[in-house]
Image 1 (cartoon, one colour):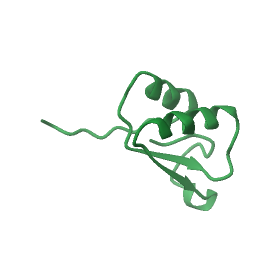
Image 2 (cartoon, helix red, strand yellow; image 1 turned 180 degrees about the horizontal axis):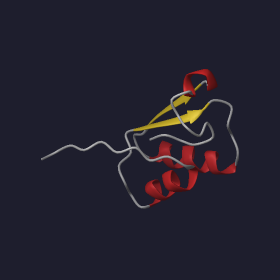
Image 3 (cartoon, helix red, strand yellow; image 1 turned 180 degrees about the vertical axis):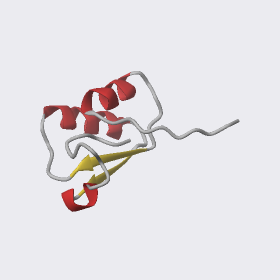
Image 4 (cartoon, one colour; image 1 turned 60 degrees about the vertical axis):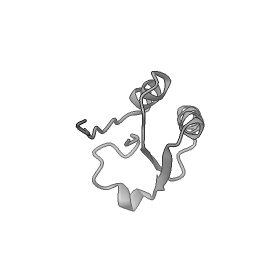
Length: 71
């Protein structure tokens, strides 16, 4: 079986991936971002075995949109 790695960015895309039953190994969230959609995403992540990592803004440089979520 072949393993492929995908990156999903954006609140809605990540939330839909969780709700559709996709297996998500790791979730990166901008530290301090705790609005409604982020809380929903972290709640969905905690239901499974997803590793949640909060990233400081200075380490978020490689992301083109600092408000997005990387999976």
